Length: 234
Image (cartoon, rainbow, N blue to C red; front, side):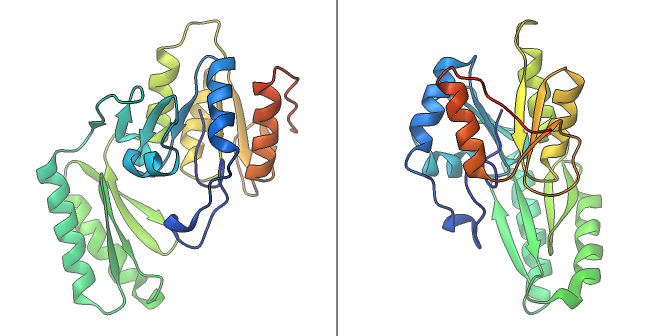
């Protein structure tokens, strides 16, 4: 189980500016063959992940677990009804339009209100978005860096990891690698299941191991895909 941004690819100033290494698609295909399957668990939408990894062979959980596609070519299952999503988008738009410098980002399974250009609006944004979340039964509010995000209530990277592990035979050891605070939910689930967890980069974590960069992740995965000993630092 692998996160995408910050784990398989380096972070970039904007989501569309990330660069996928030429060797990554083949590496993931090799790993899928050599292991018991590879799954992406990302905050990005499934459609967005397909754009960067069009030939990815495994299953995909997008939008923090609110979207799921079991295999390439299969239907994407969504956790939120279109009517609820429209309500979240409209409410976010209304708050953004009331103050200069606020930006509402529509996501396939939620909405994000950014206030990076107007940091003094943090209290206003927090109060307004909390009011919206309180009125929407299907969404919870999450703090991000200079932004507030409405995400579907229930699905998370942790719940995605739990679903994957539940379907595994007892002899299979689950592995998860991620770099962000949202990945800690999946790390906790995999730890509880007796699996292997890896934190990418700096910061506090409950993961058992740490790798410094996506490049180091590629090196580790390459060793694994080629049947060599895959060593990890504690």
